[in-house]
Image 1: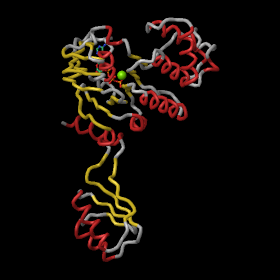
Image 2 (image 1 turned 45 degrees about the vertical axis):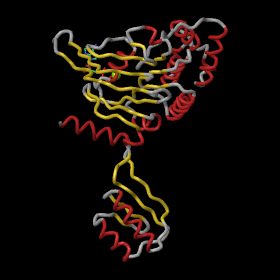
Image 3 (image 1 turned 90 degrees about the vertical axis):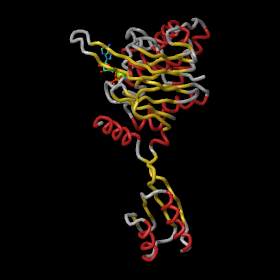
Length: 310
Ligand SMILES: Nc1ncnc2c1ncn2[C@@H]1O[C@H](COP(=O)(O)OP(=O)(O)OP(=O)(O)O)[C@@H](O)[C@H]1O
Ligand SMILES: [Mg+2]
């Protein structure tokens, strides 16, 4: 069973006054599996929030269907084990940190009392907010508010958590803390679905990503596979390369980039192996062979550019 599953989702909005139609999602089909950290990426207006809202039945698809834990999202029971950190959340500012958590805890169906208090203690401790529990949240900084929002989303120990820009406004140390907390939740078999424009962050946290552009799913896959640049390899050697060896290598790949102890080739696996054969037969020891990677940001910019010119 998939934790999240959508089938041919379409969402068309009609603008209130102009009556202009916007396709916020086009034929969107995807799955998220248990224990994954899944990132949804896309430029402003791509349809990311629309998808989260459909999955949480805050808005409804024009066509198609969506399920959480095998239950159609139209059935409110689908949300029993779900946590949610909305983008730009606004908690009532006259409440203290612990009051916010107990209020939202009760809204999510938790019973008040000692068990919930224990859980609130745990969450405030995890987020380094224990000292601030009795302080009104209007005195909280942006990063503290974000961590409180995260605590709120995890309070009922949900099996699936939706996070809309979880590290928005959080400083680098806080972001690292949040990444560690997410990794810890994942190690307990929980599933995390997040939305973020911070691609370096997404690259560090997510197992898999999907890229949306103007409502279309244009790329999906494992972060490691997507950022691998096929056919581009770097070889590092222990010994320096003689002129003769360099010339032999250039016969295989005339555009190879050759340094004192380094060879860069972009002509694929077969040529990589031929170059290695030359090195080994010349008694050159190989220190390392690496397939070059691009950053998720480079990939993102490339695929969006390509899609926009199609
Ligand atoms: N309630 C609505 N009524 C009409 N159009 C809407 C509504 N909500 C969203 N849209 C339109 O649907 C499209 C997708 O919007 P959505 O909020 O899902 O984008 P997003 O990917 O979350 O963008 P961002 O990164 O800016 O948060 C946009 O063109 C937006 O203007
Ligand atoms: Mg959005």
